[in-house]
Image (cartoon, rainbow over all chains, first blue to last red; front, side, top):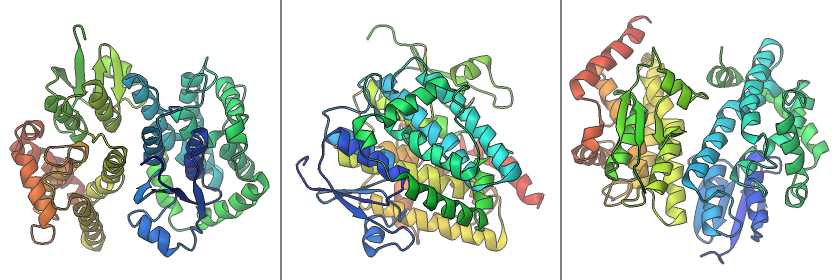
Length: 234
Length: 222
């Protein structure tokens, strides 16, 4: 099974897709990349992921796997060399817990901070920083969340090292204060300078341009209010 | 392993802590159950889950694990007999995908349907029935999502029972209609008949009363 052809359906600036790219690259797995225009979804995407209609989608032989966390774990279990998740069940539980925490408490609040202004942005920044404070406690004293090498939690949180500074610039706000969060800042730097990661990132200028337009569109959309209600504490 | 100490912090009416009870009972793990009062959380709970301050929390030999799916995977990896996740990586990925779908799509819709009415409620009902059709597509002709025995997705889908009870408490027509959703309807009957599973649902009458109080007032106040 492991030797079957691998394809990845993605969108050039998606942090979720990059989790899958990093996992594949770290394990030296060859794959064919297929760019998807998420604003004009292809019949292929709608066929492969009819439930969510989203990227990334991994195709391995005749198997189709969706959702970035599910894909990364599938990769880890199908190609067990260079393991991403630790072996010990408790350490695995901790990695999964913090990946889930960062997704629900940091990623969403940081996205709202990118798109929102005024009081909404202030609340989002405050709550994002509260989440980072907890992550700071987890990474303190470590080179990487995975210890000496990149692990599952590094991959899941990797977006913080590159997407978050772009969002801070576009949104005119700061979440990662290096004085308040020295361990997190140091981790971001270490992660970004890993050769596999550094070679596999989207172009920063293009990202700035993309998020400038995207954040404006989102803030003017009629569903942004709903996102704020769902993910931001009052 | 030497003397094992397993504690589960939960509440009688929470589908999330009931999930952990199913997992532990399926594996025959002895545990101490601690009922929490969520309006007056114990110092122990706040100590074991300072991040979310929520149940369920599993404490194994003094080490706490929180978040129901994280706990379920931990239980499966620690007590390896009677697995609740498949061994094949692809089957495992499918189980994780559908469990996530249940919590991220079905559960929010289920919570919404009992606090809305009129056209808005009809819209949510349609949404839930579509989600249930999607689940039927995964279940197909299997006895359970886990195959011949209860698995990860069956346990995750326990929230459907909470929806059914809430609807009955409010005198609503059941969304999980036998004619429209025969596959899922049949599955639910088998789940509720299962010797282990049926010990891990709230007592029906008490659950109905609880739902009437919880959801009845939110409708009346509109």
